[in-house]
Length: 165
Ligand code: SF4
Image (cartoon, rainbow, N blue to C red):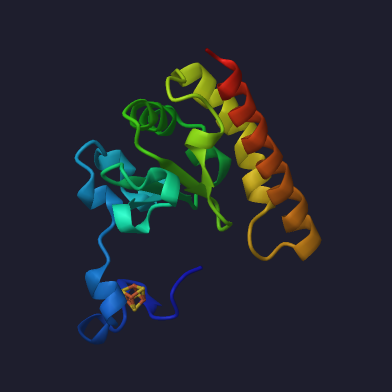
């Protein structure tokens, strides 16, 4: 949701903005492999860099994680740049977290590390509607139902992964 201090030309209290705003660095500025079209107001995606200390236990040994917060709806997720970025990042063994004003999911848990762009596109088309339905502000039971389905999907994908020699 927009900050209450957001004015027409930017931050309305810029000189006195809180520390959390002073220290925040948008992933678009941090990641070399995100071009100009990844600027959040253009892409509909806010990228965050997670340090190892912030990562879930299963990912502590990776150098960083990428959290993609979708504000631009399904169109932002299904764009070729988004799909390409997810496929390339996962292929490098980097965890990719996805949220849509909702709890996040770890995309790596929902598809194999070597997923090509076609598979990433297909899985995003399946997962994003569930994630979007689980967004904050929904009725509690609606949210729980879709989060549960995402957990089932995660377990099923892990099962599939184990069955591959
Ligand atoms: S910099 Fe901070 S206080 Fe200013 S508009 Fe952005 S979020 Fe709000």
